[in-house]
Length: 258
Image (cartoon, rainbow, N blue to C red; front, side):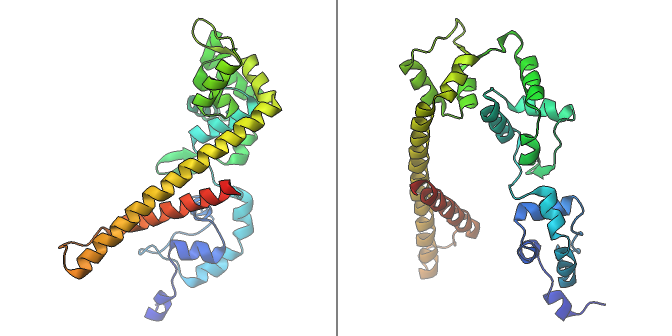
């Protein structure tokens, strides 16, 4: 029988992941795939389990890699940029149904896929799936599809299409060959990347300021409760969410300011 001392040394999900040197998503997938045993009825693992799981850590890393899995939308965006093609979420679902891509797990009930599996897809097969969806429109893209294939914001593409007097057909669609020519223009691509970085930095700073305001408001409400001028304390989880958002925004600012 396990003693109270034994139970005090038990590990929760985050503690076990930290002990094993795994990201939370790696820990979650390892558990889903049976590489880590299920916890006890209280959602905790005995310390001895951690020692045994350490032996399987290399296998877990090899199985799932170092990059977090992505959903269908991000998988489509990645393929679109790689192939210069307007790949959509529906195309990912067709590839999964056809056995070309395997779901590795779920996040918030949505299927997710390993990036290396997405990158390993045969370009000819992806093109075939996209062509089947588009039919006679295969060789053209609408503005949204063009932006997707280029990895640009839609408004940036629309502006540059105007600058370059890019021809559109009666449906307002552009030749896929013209879109790929834009992607091959290194000077243009470099200019757009600078603009994208500036936009991302601006948005990150806005997010930082907005969530800082939320956090400061929470602190004021907490102070009011402590001083007795408010009857109810603020919601603790609101502070945790705002603090995480501030941290994420500051990381983004630091990344794009470098």
